[in-house]
Length: 238
Image 1 (cartoon, rainbow, N blue to C red):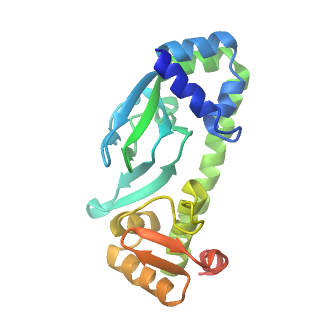
Image 2 (cartoon, helix red, strand yellow):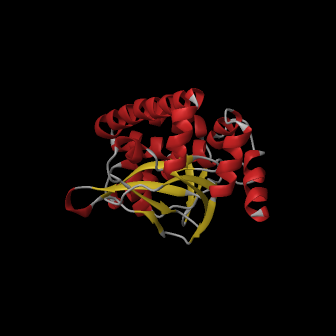
């Protein structure tokens, strides 16, 4: 239990902007103690399934270390990446509040460590703490607005704009390596295409175009952004 507490404490100390830190501040001492006592720690290998579409939600998941993607299978088995999770964000609770099975899946992008809190406990806390209830209302409303914007972008932007936006999403979520230009996530071309709502071949061709335009340098799965201003311009205007 002490190792769990230390890991949670370390995650909370990373910054005041993280989801978990924000909710931690509005819990009572008793609620914090109950969460610590019920918290379970899981480790997942690269590409290992955390939960699958159609399963009944049981936990509020919190990513402590690593990277996670939420996906949904569409027509013909084509996979769409819906959302990227970074430390220390939580996820996997919407379906429980809606009283329905999961409508998407969650997988580890890389070896990851996650905390899991029983959603039955989360519901009990919400019923007794109005501030926590409003916190979740705010988070769900914010995510819904973001999803609406993303749907429009994925359906109306040219493929150049969609791929540029996907790269900006990766940058905003995971940042750069120490060289301040290499994205701190190494994605397959298929995953990049699934994030951008395009075929893998189109993703490869568009990446090559960005390289020729001296916006990027690509070395295998390593992508260096050498003209961030231009990339953001392409993301905005296509």
